[in-house]
Image (cartoon, rainbow, N blue to C red; front, side):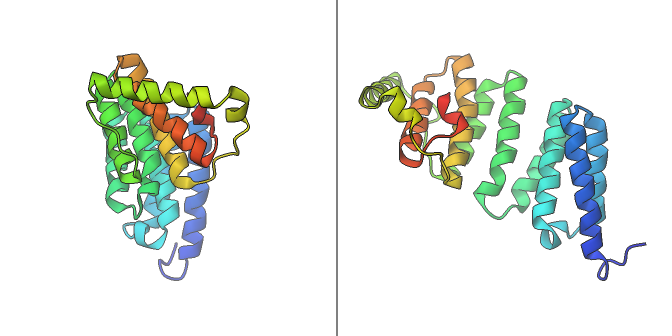
Length: 212
């Protein structure tokens, strides 16, 4: 039996083992088993988990949200994500949750909702996109994009260093997610998204999402 104050390091250790087991189960597509392991980890760290084991609690909630999304349990997913958004300290700690929610909405065909969620976190990260760009705004972005592509050859772009700035990496990750939704939906936002990705890549370097 654990004594809360004396054995909390051991409690965290066992909760972390549950987290790792949950992640492995999720990667094996055993989503129900993943949810069981992850919930066990959260139960172990208890009601003060966010204060006493912030990173572990965040990781458990993120993995549980993703397992719920992948198994189609969207209400459960929303519960985990809402808890993360209520408890997290900085926007970067919310990025994965937003990304999961974007993927979940897109998988349900709610493409405009997915784009709106992406714009919300991008604003927090300092990347501004108009929610409903005009045709003129789309054409202007396309012109700027073509101009930049003309100024930079493909070998030059591929030779850019790897992106290391956490905020830029998070922004490109979200932009890539809503870029796919914008492409499928035929949104006029797509040229603005591609322009932002290119601008961030030129300033901070390449990521795997820079090739969208």
